[in-house]
Image 1 (cartoon, rainbow, N blue to C red):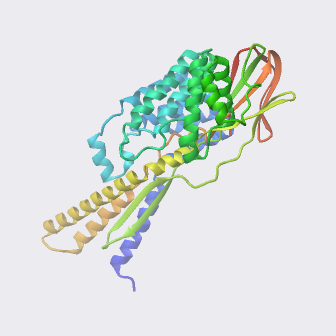
Image 2: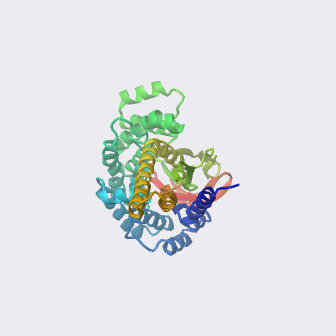
Image 3: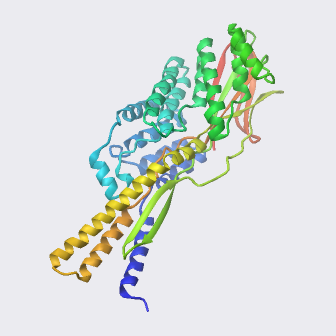
Length: 440
C-alpha cells in the first residue's frame, strides 16, 4: 500500500516534469524561423522572428540583435543588418563583470535569469557578418576593419581563461577570409600574412579539435603569393614542407580573374536540455544542463564550374563542431553552477521548513509539506540555458575558380544540385569576384 506522503511526492514529481516541459525555451520558439530559413525564405523568417520575439529590451537583447541582424543580412538588406549588428557588437563589448542581482536570481531559479552574453565564437561572428555585409557592397575597407576587430576581440576573450585554455582561441576561416579581402583590395603583403596565420591555426587547433587541417588551397595561396611578392625564403620554406602542392594555375593574374565563393551551408544545431530529477529525504531535486545532440558531420560536395573548367570547394569552418566543443569547454563551469544552485535551493527549502515549524510551534506535517512544496518549486524553476545564435550556418565552404578575362557562364552546385547560375558573369583580369551564397 502506498503511503499518502509517497503518493504526494510521486504526483509532485509528475507535476514538476509536466510544468517544466510546458515551459517555453528558445529552441522551441525559434523553430518557425529556422524552418523558413531551411526553405530559403529569409523574408518569411524575419516575419516569424518579429512575431515570436517582440521584446528587444530585456535580457535577450544581444541575442535579438544578432538574430535579426543576421536575418537581414541573409535577406540582402545589408544597411539594416549593419545597424543591428553594430549595436550587437557595442553591447557585447559593454557586457563586463558580474550583475549581482541577476546572479542571485539565477541561483534561486536558473541561468535564464542572466543577460545573454553569447559564446566566444558568436561574439566573433558578429564581425564576420558585418564584414560580409560590407564586402557584399564592395566596401573592402570597412570589411577589413571588421576582420581586424576579430584580432582584438580574441585577445580580450582569451585573457578570461587562465588555467583552462579555451579551445576556440583563434579562427582559421576568418583569417583566410581576411586574406581574400586583402588580396581583393590589392594588399598582397597583408593577404600573405593572413593566409599564413590561417594555415597555422588550421594545422594546430583546428586539426586537433575539429579535424580540419590546413586545406590544400590555403597552402596553394601561400605559395602563390610568396612567389608573386618575391619573398623567396618564405616560399622555399613552405614549398619544402608542401612538395605535393601546386599553385601555378591558381589566383588572378594579368590575364585571369577569379571567382571566390563563400558558401554557408545548413544551420547550427539548437541546444537540447538534459535533466536529472531525483528524490532525497522526501525532497524533489532537479539538475538541468545544456547539450548538443551527437551527430556525424554532414557531407557536402561543393563545385563551381564554367563550361569544362571546374573547381571543388573545401570545408573552411565547422561551426557545429565549434559550438559542441564550446559546450564541452564550459561543462565544468555549468556543472559547478548547477551544484551551487542545487545547494542554494536546498537551503531555501530547509529554511522554509524550519520557519513553518517555528510558527506552528511543533514539528508537524505542515512543515514537511512546506519543505516538499519548496523543493518542487526549485525543481520546476531549474532550466538549462538553451539560448544560442541559431541563424548561423552549420558549415562554411570556400571555392575558388580562375577564369580568363571576359564573360563566362558560372554555376555553383551542392551535392549535384545547382544553387546558383549566371549565364554571363564578367571576369576582369587581376580581379577577385566575391560571391556569397547560402544553402539549406
